Length: 228
Image (cartoon, rainbow, N blue to C red):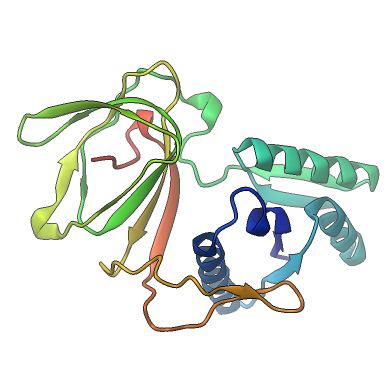
């Protein structure tokens, strides 16, 4: 049974923001539609995952719970709490690879990624900062530091594609979240009036300004992210 638990700490805590609520709502809507096309349905709950997941797993008689692995300190602490509660109930907890192409322990600093091209609009945010070296198709290069929280939006088309590589030349891993706007639109963060209903489900008015997006969480020192 597909399940997503909306943790209120992510909506109203230190990192809460209207944009986060908007993106979460649109992502859950898209996932729900995809599952419906496969003959399944997404169950959404609001509250403490460590309480909700074991309770629901017990209600349906599940022998195991499989999750997409989280890599943040907050996510790991949350998953440890869920795993402990499931273990107490005699239910197995299985973590699968998440959104990363390479797991954190598989990635070393000082590695260089292959050249790749970007042909659509996108933006990126630095999750773990370090120093990066980029080489471009015209022979030029740039060395710069990337700071946690730094965000940049870029516009590209097949005719104006960005072609470059990226090497992590810092002392720590360099990690980004990259969001690609698949239809070339630029209003991905334009809706800011998101709310939650009485059941805690995120509600966002559809004003027609949103565009299809794809989000990837990548380590750039293995050549899988795009940072101009």
